[in-house]
Length: 134
Image (cartoon, rainbow, N blue to C red; front, side, top):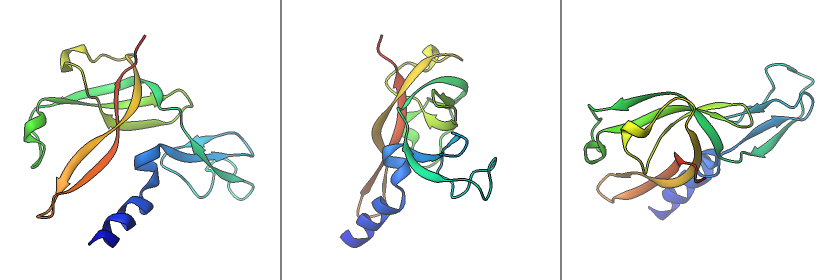
């Protein structure tokens, strides 16, 4: 079973490290990673890019009717985050009261538990966001 856990971690590196791609031809940055730049197409030179994890809330909603496995978290905010490097990503916001969330709120990524799966209780982690410290 440990082989499956290691495979899970290797296959989803972006989820754990906020790693996307950058086109060295035009400077475009993408998350999740892409194999080709949508602007440059065949001329693109794609490389891995580690995002800073800093951004701001572009849009958000408060989840009150939760899916199975997330009942203990309700209510919780989920937001579209505009990273300072440009891409928008969707993530849960943690460590604050849902009433504190607003468009434009400065946030930073953090590494947190998502869920414990199956009978073995395999814990899956990924990025979430929290309010930036001043």
